[in-house]
Length: 279
Image: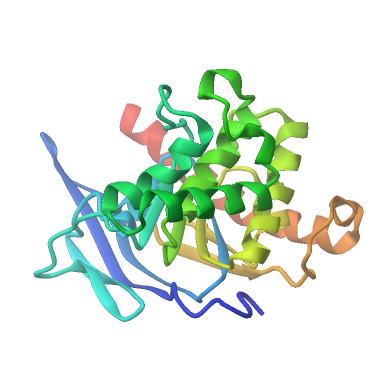
């Protein structure tokens, strides 16, 4: 079961979400009638064709824009919907594909920044917490490094620890490992799962990598061609902690194939729609 001890927060409910953008040609639907629930402590992987609206949905959860209709609630509190002004909050932290560490700060100062800026912790408390969390993430030797001195893997781990420093109810990851080589990505997968085991925050994770989705997720949600809505929810019944030896097993390969078939159906639709628009 997703979550476990300590995973009391982070229940996400998306109900009939619709997001349309105004264009010179009229309203363009990015998300349409999308409903999804994510349980506390669950790692929910979102996959689908490029441009289908996955990031638009994640941005609505993050509070970066309003919905056209429908609602989103986090731990019973409506964060998007009719009469709700969209705004980011410390209960939702986003890690994007492109890094966002402050280049003039050390790793430790970057990790400490959020609670200090919000006034949630004093300097001594923030420093102690940051050092402990960085040690848990295998970053004890990186505390005094600047971003330019770090490898891509270390930078990304620092970003995720910085996000976790705020004790968010949900962590929103938008293809955070896309630009990494396969070996670094594999190491990052194991590091993320180790961090999640210590602090089982709810994670909504967008990826195009189906093997990544199966390895990391409690569940995979396949989204339709634009406009975005779930077409398949696939529970990954493999034990944690996940080890890479599992990727050679029949169960793992079966999940990857099931996800691939579902995404392929939607990718064909997306390609056909693009060809029609270009004609």
